[in-house]
Image 1: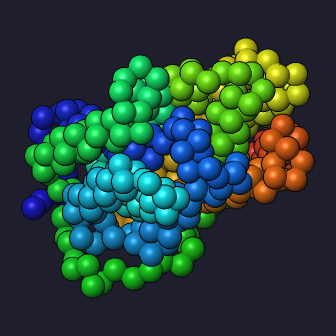
Image 2: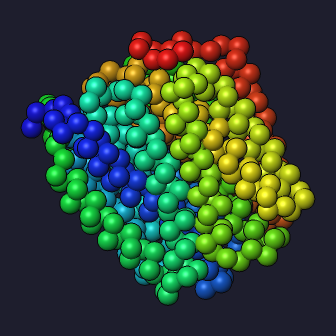
Length: 402
């Protein structure tokens, strides 16, 4: 099938973005439900963080082994495989009577996200009129982060106000996955010259020469942004319950969702601010979010947690969209999904390692102090990233805003 955007304008781009959002929502769906699983299965906070991080390892594994698969076999087949993994993940959570089911569900959701991140981002951009435009990159990154925000919000509302709190969220997601598969089959393929799956080889971390100059700052900003989300989503639900007596799952899910929705807001501002300035301002927002989160942990104040979600999320959105736009614009068409996948490998390393560290430390010094230690580490990293970007700002790619 011939590549190129559909003649119906932006509709295919938006439809593919909606499919992207549905898949990503499934990866954060269990976030406000972990306390219920703890009560039912009786495991520690360290186990919660390890279960959470298994997802990131699944993502990284797929990105390294098959991050370039959609460049060969086409975008739609890879995305259909991703939806299949998302469906089996939901079934695993529906069957979660032991801890092993939770690990299986998280691993499968990581596989689905790994299949989607590079392929869906490239697909959304390629289906848009004038592929690679700033508007198309916003649709892709907004679908990613917006979907991540919808997961805990949906699960929290259903767990709090509907029956079957550990089952209904995943039943709803299964319905959405089925609808997404039907929509995906109605879109056209954008990879013109496809090759068999046997030609796909595991990719070593590496970049085409024309991408390397813009990739360093982009990867650094992506790492620290996802690290903040990792710390925030792993610490805040348990902290709300343990120190602020907030046992409402809808409130817990909403606060986590606010960080992701604020990210979408930050992404929407990149076009006005400019990509180069957005990277530096994004790091400043991340630092401010970390400071507010540390203050919230120290003085146990709910408003500061909300403010940290909003400011840190906005900073992540500014940095991440600018990073993704610059990397995508600099990537050759034949390796765009592979390069984007490499960027996400760096990002998901940020979302996994701090989470496990928080869990390990919380068993020794408590959840509050563990959160403060890792927030301090991330603050140092964000500060270094911001100073690096100010001292050595990358040049905008051709046709990109300064």
